Length: 265
Image 1: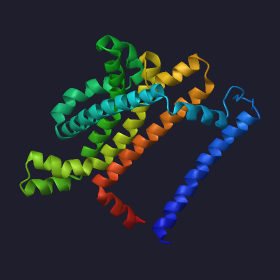
Image 2: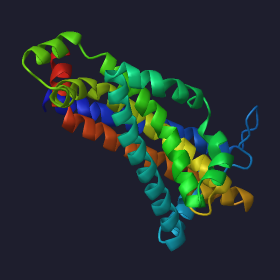
Image 3: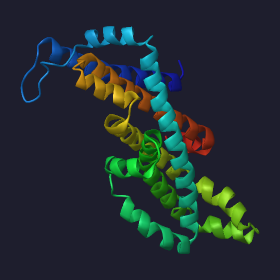
Image 4: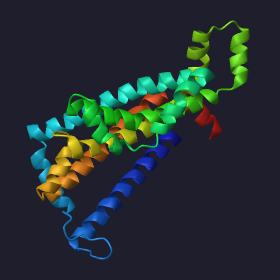
């Protein structure tokens, strides 16, 4: 067995152990109805949640809620990625543009995405547009800031060398600045995806009519405790899949990072 395979199997076993401990804690809490500072008296057991989930899997309404949430998160996140990366690259390269745009964005940045719900309902013509906008807001600022930081962190020697070799602004941006900033950009994408999910679920709970967030809130309103846990678990799994997709894309676009990791180990 190769060393790499042993490391992968060891990592998988640790992951399974971690999840097993979490489920075991959940089972013990519900089985013995723990009631100290936190209470498990109304929390459904893992077996009950599993049975309810198996009954929901074939439900067209449940599948539609998942599909709508995925559609919203992808649309809001893609728009945030495009605008955040482009604006971050331009602000990083042009001080005048940064001086003009960044102070206004810094005023808006500390506002939590959830606080945008009332104004977004007034701004946009439909509930769907306002939910996608709130998802966009959640992802946009982490992507923008990390891209900007990535541009400023590019070694000035590389830029001067490219200039000396006759590189124009477009070649400099696409062949030096962008590759140099990619690790920071992907950090922003990973953080932005997490914040986008938080924003989306909050928006769906408050103003949505469909989606996993609405499903979870509706279950709470109807006192369907297993469905609350199912909604939470679905959100967690979908978020994990999206983060995994970003990491996989990062490995494909930055093969030199894997080489650097191997050499450092």
